[in-house]
Image 1 (tube, rainbow, N blue to C red):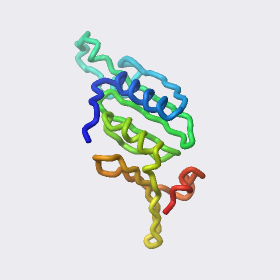
Image 2: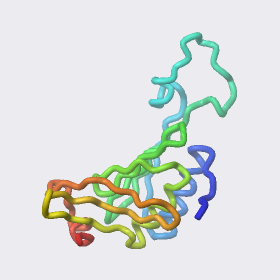
Image 3: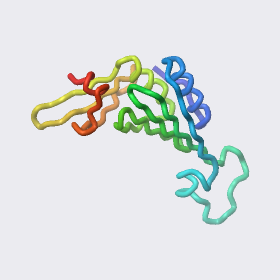
Image 4: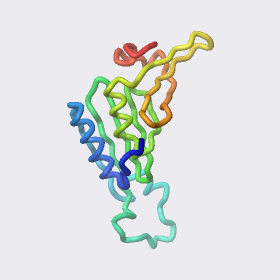
Length: 151
């Protein structure tokens, strides 16, 4: 299932806020704009000093905090990168897939798979039309919301 393209950080912020509103979640967003404010500006600083004056060249990052349960934060970076953290478990998600990922979390397409040997626990988020997102979970990070998803 193709997702709506989110070509800018602001379009991704708007899509995430709309998805959160659809699920009755409150949102707090903070923006970092400019080379002196963003990680992309610090790492990709123009050594020659002859940068472009176009608005598209100004890095824009955002941190979106969404009330839970589960507690969710979305960190949107300048170059189509995003990190979605669900109850302290971080997932690298393509920016275009973030709204679908959040929809899967809030509609119950999340489960924890536990193995006895070797002992491990994995959080799996199933996004329709995409491969599942998987991250390791330690017993120290197991919240009540996550514990209810244990299989």
